[in-house]
Length: 400
Image 1 (cartoon, helix red, strand yellow):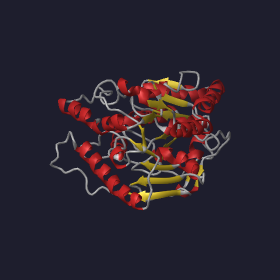
Image 2 (tube, helix red, strand yellow):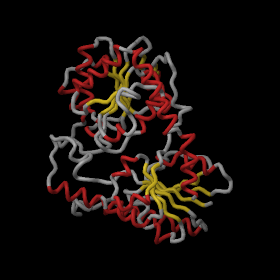
Image 3 (cartoon, one colour):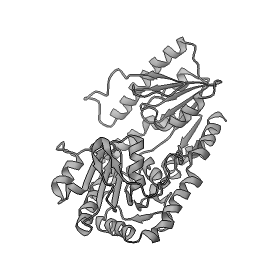
Image 4 (cartoon, rainbow, N blue to C red):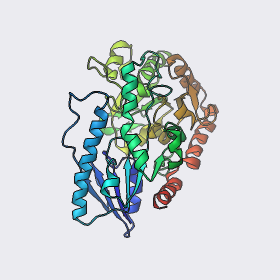
């Protein structure tokens, strides 16, 4: 079988799938991406580069569409090279939204087009209008509607699609649900496993918390309102006053991965450090970490805070659960699909730092009571989100 993966990042959601398929000598696996870093044994990686980005004079409603078209054109040029080398895929599997899959049915009309459908945008009822302090304008509503244009093109063009959770599939137009299978990417539960008694020492960044009994953890790609970073930091300020021995470890970059940046150019980390009274000797920002160090952080965690707007669910929450972390999570739909309050985690009001702090203290004050919840958290991942179970299903879906 010949398969072409398309994703602007590498390897992203296709890491395990591409790796496994490339191990079969009967397969020829090509991965088209914009990211030059990284390799997978047996996967032939090819780089595509859009000729430019959307012009400043382009109407702001359609800049996302213009960028998607430019990305699709770059893939078109890339596939001319592949055709010249006699590579005609049986299957093209790409991430929808950014544009790499837009013209595949014109380029390879005989290929089966599969799309990974991560999110469909709505002005009302999910992420965009979640925070009452950020009211939407008419401009916002129109821009969000048009933002779905490349995704709608893929929904029409593709033969089949896949979404990682039922909540995420629910966001897509009902008339396309029959095209979309729900199957999570899967969590490697052999790697993400509990390690009781783990002492947190990260030599590369001179962090030694081996003598600390209370470690509160937070993980996100960026530090932004979409993942509740302001509320988290307010929670930290409260907990530092209540618990003089607790330490907080924050894994992620000082950037905005989702949503809007601050208009004055500051980052949300800078803003929160300026506005809150914090003991910085007990607050540790690690930046991005290698997987081995990230694993140590969540294995050593006493309690893990995960907050998100009604949006795409993060891998980090499931990875933390797989290690037996006690999750204090936002009472929002993507989290509630996985966590039942008091059973395999604790749920809390996204907008209430006081209540988040209360539930964190509930965990720290009653470790014995929480032990069964930690066990159930890992059991949830083993039962429903284990890579060992889901990867064969994913491959079967791809080949079917």
